[in-house]
Length: 468
Image 1 (cartoon, rainbow, N blue to C red):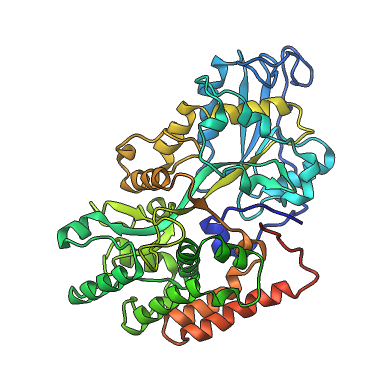
Image 2 (cartoon, rainbow, N blue to C red):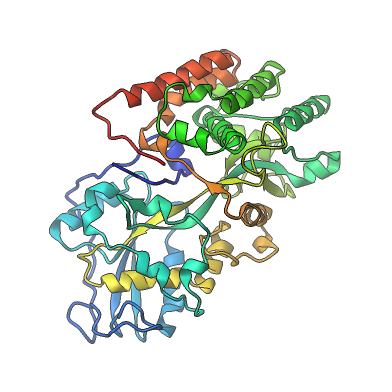
């Protein structure tokens, strides 16, 4: 099996496994899509620039949307723009929490929805329904509602996490940016400069101690955020050879000099008590609040979801801001501005949906500048559509910094899949909590991480990802 790339969101990292296809007996109760022009709501028109998929006028499109952190209203918003392209078209949004148990039976029955946000802990396994999904290359080749080719308006690499066995079948809509976060207000008050290298971070840790503060904090369920920081920093320092060694579970991959270099600095920080003590016994959101509300720690590694997640536990005028992960030297193989970023919230269009053309049209509407801007304004997160976040980030400093980081990274954006693909996160939590607590040294952590990788590599019953 070959999978080109993947996206890791917070829920997946904490869960530590890819949700597999689940069977259930409950099907979503809903009306059948219909059209004034057609009994099945399917296209009767030849495609045109304004209607590239040939959606019938007055047709209805059934969209089953995961009702999670982003809600479903951003898809309902499509009804405000889609009618300007195809008269009378209506999107019927059905919120769903347990995607696989509710929708897998409809695939079996041959009557799936026209569009599905295949997200959440119970997402349907993509490989199990691959042959039942429309390929979505034509969506990116179409022009958006502003008349621009969609492929030219989105960030690079967004097809990768939705490509399975060389078939692009899932359009991931939300950009997740990984970095290191801090309070711009606190840093300005103390004349501190956000670190670009690990040596600079060490110096900052000493300054923090003089103020009675710590450099980092961790929570027990999110200790592997520091594994993410380690890997991202090492990949930037050592280049693709580090990423490929980890992805392909190579022998001694965790002993790569770039990984060991970062790990040694982390070990020094732990020994010099630059981490808030007791993290391995602290629930992760409470630990994060020590940083965002109490400001006892200066830095925290996380994804762009952190602002929204901690909005009720963040000090007033915190001005949450992100920076790329630190590098070991000032001359890494990848530029300092390089960024781990991945598209998430995968949308799929089943072939057997009554209005598959309509499902694609909803995606085209969501990729319009107006709809993408609405998402960022209401969810404080960037979509894959470039240039839709204003300079003030709708009042969100975190959103502003994510946009700036993506722009600065340009083509230097990377991602990896192996942790979630093999369900490694749960196993990694134990040694990482021990390491960050000072109970395990860098050598011991390296052995533990390598053992986890080796176990998967040597298990012939596990399909392997082949990354090149």
